[in-house]
Image (cartoon, rainbow, N blue to C red; front, side, top):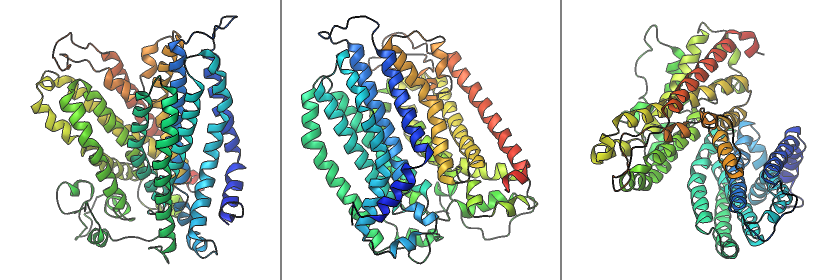
Length: 541
């Protein structure tokens, strides 16, 4: 009933594993890993197995860490919509009315959502075995790495299932899952790095310590999700309930959003007491007062609390004790906006399709340009205000750390990069929303495009350095990445703790190039969205 005769598990496996994209994903994943190993394979006719070149160890570490990051990104995307998907398809109550026990439903959903990811991880095992003759890594480290990957997938999937039981939209469940998983990924990477060179210790740690905490957390999270299915708070609404934020705040524990006070009113304006003025944009008015908060404020409250909880120790370390690492704190803020920003715009147009109200919107007197800037401005406003909550430590550090005063122009460049990132992420999300029919697909597509633009170039540069490949125009390969632009900002004085040494020249042309490329990308996507909105008959199909 729980595994072998679980109809939920059987149905989900048949639907997920028989699709064409599952085979394409598996084939593409294997081809990519095989290409990396092929590039790293030595050219010598005879291989000396007695040596352990450091490049081989760096390659294997990059191989494992890459899979770890991929697992942290893909596990929530599969699991975070397990229960919210039932609510969005209006089959949630039918599932609850079935003779299945809640534990069987949760277990079936979790196993089905993680099976495909587990296949990807296990399918890479033969490829990594081929890397063992290169030296630099022991068999124990391979076992420890794969055991850690499997445990991480289970934990990340359980987090996604638990978040899915609390929300009515997959987008909200997905972003909260990512924010919870982000610190766990950071801890996992630091722990793996700290045990570098000790394969047996890594294996003992993975066999004795990590499984105990992971299994305990998985059981607690799955038990919580099963308890919410046993006594669902939203039964009778078909998962389409509209919550009253005031009533929700009265029952809330912890952070409470008060829409009539500063700074909450920056992204949560108070309820309207008068009629809408003449000449105002009805799309903007409707979105800012109702659409953003129609499903309650739980997601916003969790986002603020989790991000601030992580920002406090990072602020002390990166801004005050080690001011030369201030770029890493801005990178954390950029990562936060990457996770949170697209949520408010990925459903701007696809939600209209799902509610079957797109035809009504397109045939109204509202112009396509009003629809565009009304929805875009609301999403950017909420995402930018939430991102600014993480900038207050930087504002506090500016007058307290003398080194920042001598680098005022550099701080201004970093702030400009952050603004460009906020705008670019929102426009990419709205562009995907105009092309996709489902909000969940639009959100995943947005994250995929962002990863290709921001992360893939830097990963390629790191791989070229490990493989000792001279790439043409290597510095300009990262012109689309804001992380590369942040660390390329020139500093007028050295920010090292002793305050000595030459100034960091950086790469000012790369920073300017990032700004030009980002502005051009935003302009092109806005033009494409405008053309889509003007071609009303295409969107109305």
